[in-house]
Image (cartoon, rainbow, N blue to C red):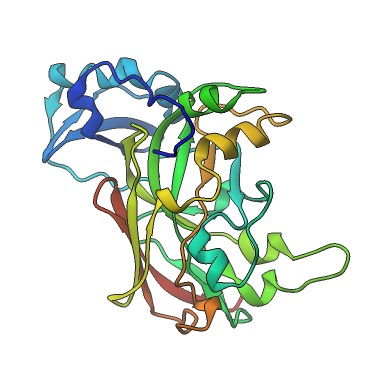
Length: 291
C-alpha cells in the first residue's frame, strides 16, 4: 500500500479479501463466478458487468449461498467506457529509458476494441516492425466519481486485473513536433490490451506480476514501484473527467520492455504471458496479418 495515509477499503467479510471474480459468458448473458482458493461458485443470474462492479459488495457476500461450478471462465471481465493509461509510472522503467520522473500523471487512452481475452491473438500488422509488450495491473472503478480526493479515489477501486499494454513502438515514436508522439497508432490498435479473465477484489495491498515471452522472464514488477499510486492517478484525472463503474486505469509498466534494447521485439508466433499469483494471468500469441 502506498504511504499516503489512506486506510485500505473496508471489506465486510474477511474471507472475501482473497476472492477472485470472473464471468461465464453464454450468448449475450454474463454469469459471475466467484472463487476463493480453489473453490468456484456461480451466480446463476445474468448480470451486466458494470452493474456487478457497482454492486460488488452485495454480490460477493452471496458466496456461501451459491452453487459450486467446475467450469473455467474465459471471457473478458470488463466493459469500460474509458481506459486510461499513464505513459511513465514505474521508477524502474523511468531509469531504463533514461527519462526523469514526471511531475504529474500523463495519460494516453485505449479503446474498448483493444481488449482481448485468454488465448486470443495479439494482432500484428505486417507493417509493424517494433511490437512491444508491457505487463501491467489494471484498477477497475466500482462507483461513479467526479472531483474525488485521493481517499475517495482509493475507495472507488473495486478490483484489479492483469493486462498487457501492447505497443507498436515504430508508430508510437512517429513524433511530430510540437504535437508529440503518435499515441493512437502506437497504442490503440485492436487487440492491444489483453486482459486476464479473473480479477481480484481490491484490498489495497501491493501486487507482484511478471511478463514472459516464449517462457523467458522479461519483466518483474510490484505496484509498490509506481511513481503515482492508483489513488493519485484517479484523483488527478477525476478533476475534469467523470469516472463510472467498469472504467479502467492502468498502473504503468516496470523495466524490461523490448524498447530498452535488452530484448528483441515481438515476432509472429511469439507467446506473451503476464501473470500475478494474486490475480491470474493472460497468455496470447502474436499473429501477423496484412490486410
